[in-house]
Length: 350
Image (tube, rainbow, N blue to C red):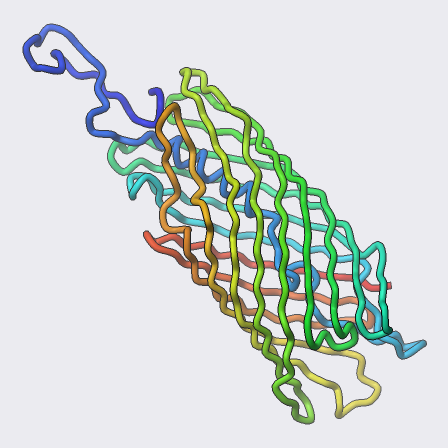
């Protein structure tokens, strides 16, 4: 095997005039399954550690029992697991990827200009991995891909009203990512390489209070996010001589609407607990499809340029200074692309 296609050993010659000789042919343009493994590794490396504001920090605050003042997060931890299924090469390849990650972070500085707004600056780091299986429909061959690595970086969040998070907010983050990657083709040598690069995000939204009752407040939030994905690899050459080039440089835009209901504790002046249920819908657009170039042939992931997403979850503080949140999200695209993930997060304020 070499390049992006399978080669078959056929008796005779290409013109059919010599039946005593043998020749290699790829006239059927049958893709190698390794193509899907390279694409899966690239996609995972560029998306594993990407977050929205609520993925990373949640929203609920707690009240200091000694001072009565609102306090904010100083340390948070989140763990996510999920599965992605996609096709590649115009449906020739089927891929299933299982992925997981852990991220830890916290505020290191805060500023305010009027005692109402507040700018939070924090640091974060994470470890993640993914494992994928790619199957070629035509040849029946298979391959597997795997990455594991880390990210480190900063985030900054500004709230117009830090007390109840109403009004405008702006959130941004930037990460350096490093992964060790490998591809194992059927009856092929293991290929090892590295994926490195920067991912970054800018997000903004407006939290509008729709109304309230004795027990609950109701909120609606339109929001938008743009994320740069620049994790790729220097040219890698397989043991069979095939030159591999994976290059992301994708910009992903996300437009969404989030509805939440939150208990307001009006019935109990001594209560310090809060809880929030939410549901949100998003539309995602990617400027580039994740792809691999093998020698002169470029093959891309199918169906992920435009995605519909729905996410729902709950956030609550279980102790005076300990908050937890859980959500589950689902994305769907063309050509039966789908991605599902579940997240559990916790934060401790002190």
